[in-house]
Length: 256
Image (tube, rainbow, N blue to C red; front, top):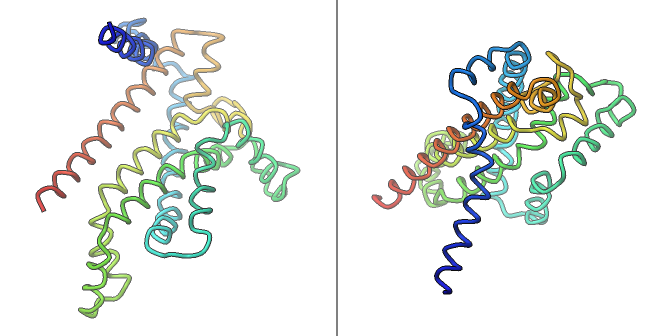
């Protein structure tokens, strides 16, 4: 009896989690999905999403990597508080994040003179805000996994800290950095709430793929289904990439 209930609970949970996602692909044939993806609303949103997310991820890599390294390799007062604070965007409702961005970068915000709200720059800022914590957390864990003795040995051989980082630390941390990059990009692609509040939903200007789904549900549900399938496919590919990297890293550690 207990075994049956246990098995049933697992089955119900799996059905609940996977049925809504897999059913998206059942609604349309592959040919219909491809045809719907050629619609103007989808092409514009896809182009904008790719452009903004690539810029957002590059910014995160440039500024998030040094921060993650500092948190992983330097002990300082307030480190734990900073780590918790950096995780806030993960649990903060996206609408709240959008309001905060408006209060800082909006027309009447602290930097109101920049007038960034309802522009493509606002889309990028929203994506950075919501996805950066995913990269920083993964990068911090990757740097922590690098043995400090390797750094010390390199320094005793007369190698500068900068060269030691690029020739020793960075290659060893690369699998974790790639995983964090993929997760951060996936989160940026799916960003909706903060973008809607801060950048608006302007076709060809601020309308990303998630916002295009919201718009298409009112006018053409078939397009909305096709875009949803596209985002799910991209997310699945990125997760497979992350899983492959993690598996390779574990194999390297076990063989060393």
